[in-house]
Amino acid sequence: MEEYNEEMEEELHDLSQEVGHRVKDFAERVHPLRIVLAGLVLLMIMGALASTWYWVIPRDDVEIQVTYLQRNGHIVLTELVNDGSREITDVTLRVEFLDKDNVVIADLQVAFDLIPSHTSISGDKMELIARGYTVWDEYSIHVSIEWTNFRGVESQQNFIHFVSESQTATFSDECEGVTWFL
Image (cartoon, rainbow, N blue to C red; front, side, top):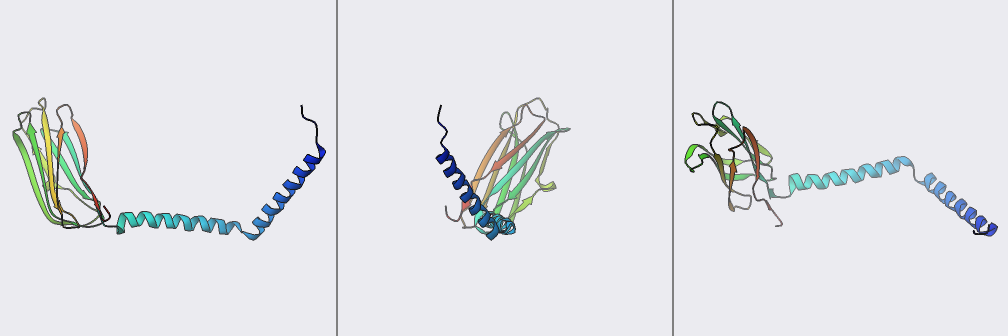
């Protein structure tokens, strides 16, 4: 067991007193309101950086949301989302509903001259309904999209989804993005 060292205890006491005085001096010089304001400024700077990525930096971010339902036939609902910071042009979206032998049962094709940034498009013209076909067979949904990005480069993507076992299914297809520095 260590011996009691009075000299060491006195040094520790003096050191703790000195630290306490420094903390007290710092607290008197820096008001808590200044600390809160500095934190708010830091949050604002971080928010500005995130907003810059979302709104200012040129980038493509095209997504296709597909929902499949079995209701008195087969229903395919499609939503096209341009979540990028620049518009896309010359957009063609094609959705095909195929049976197990790859025979097209129903299809739709929509074209848009321009889709502004941060815009979503859906509605009646993007709904596909196939009635009179059994719900017990194997089916697939083929989605293809073509567009011109903000650089003027034509892009194309294809996606395939199988829906034989599902009464309801949701698919989210992310197209390959382009950023100004990549």
